[in-house]
Image (cartoon, rainbow, N blue to C red; front, side, top):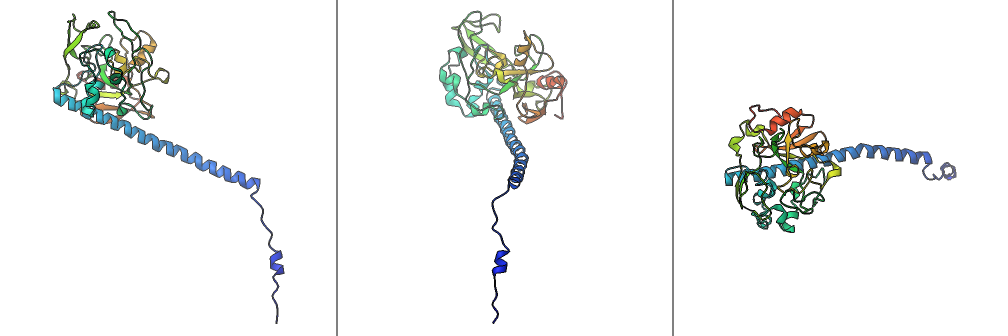
Length: 321
């Protein structure tokens, strides 16, 4: 009987060692390439989600503004009176923040409110592409009045600002501004003359009302900006006016922006940044329009067209944005 020998076969196989250096380098190169291809896609996906969240924030703000309008029959003023409070605080009951709203004494200026009222953070007031919260102002929220003097009084921040209109010298966020949301018509005790003058420290705001309503958006609600993302340089985070306390009705640059090529009230090139809209989204800035729709507007839009979108009644409506 023949016997089969396996020796020849066994001797033909050699025990294999580990990976060679070349093979390891190839594997590392492949992995690096895959990571390089994957990371941008992941980042783009995350930014798309953040941009969507930002648009949803503005949508909720729009619902609150329209709720305010339905209740009072006028749009929330950018600030109810100089030194008192801004639109961002006035709409809080319509954002299910009635307890915070009630913690504020509506007759007192911003500077005399409690820490809780000034510093309470509202998450949807922050764009996730720019920063998270809570964050408070760090500088220049001081008492800006010839009748008063004082130190910085911090307050919570926001990445959104109302539209004060087309930038024209001397009328940015004042009585004659042509934005959708401008300074309100208030009455204080003791009274101040003329209207809009600084009220003394102990003055109480006994009444106010807005100056504009949806019906005053003569260029069409769908063609008029109510609120948009505000431009803030990273070096100025938390610093008024560019990024001061959002509830503070003193510094217009903290809670409002304007469109157009001019920057009224700018005493230096730095002051110009207090007026601009802008965002951290690549190529786009989100805006809430008067009809409640949120649109992403290309940052390459001309300053003139943006100005026309911020003006409520200039007779030059812009469509197709």
